[in-house]
Image (cartoon, rainbow, N blue to C red):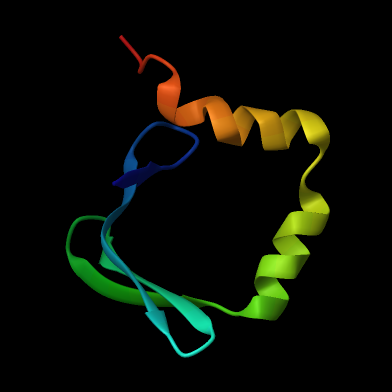
Amino acid sequence: MKLYSADKSELMQVSTVERRGDDLVIKGKVFGTMPMSATLTPENARAFLKLLTPGLAWFLLTLPFRKGAK
């Protein structure tokens, strides 16, 4: 999976997502070269859920089924 910046340049290539205890660990490379490991804690996941509106939640649920950029 790739994450892009606002100018459509590649920001991060995610290679693995795994559970470590109660945390979610995301591993990949930033800017294609620098290895990185990011941790999502339960507190941060709850903070993310507070940012969701019903419309954004629906968009996230339907995102995998949408057509990609041309």
